[in-house]
Amino acid sequence: MRSTRKRREVLLSLVATRELRTQEDLARALKEEGFTVSQASVSRDIAALGLVKVDGKYALPSKEKSRKNPLKERIAGNLLGIRRSEPNLLILLTPPGEAPGVGLALDRLAPPGLAGTVAGDDTVFAAVEKPSDLARLEKLLKRLK
Image (cartoon, rainbow, N blue to C red; front, side):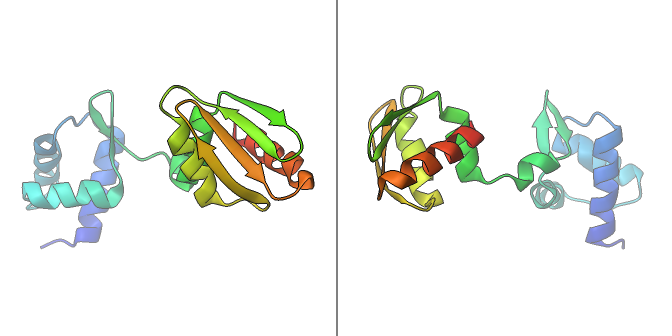
């Protein structure tokens, strides 16, 4: 019986070199390599390895994506514009329905100087504690965008 670690190494290699579209395809390919697997073990391997489906076939996870902060990703992916309302408020524009998620992500990110957020449907008001924090928060958000 071969180890889970070895099976997962082989699975990564198979996914990188072959077009495998279903869990059955993965199980069949592993069996061809000498592994005895069940659908449940293949499913656990997929989750443990972070395999994703791209164009209908299994693929390796993007290393760049796995290193990114999901809170920053949420903000960056939905931030359409930034306007200042001096002295302590930034107005963040988002697609319809995305403001609550952006506001929550910004609150959880808790950048220095952020007092809090209020979100509508497509607009977030981000209040800072001091006027000097406004430029710092704006700079952070522009880097994310």
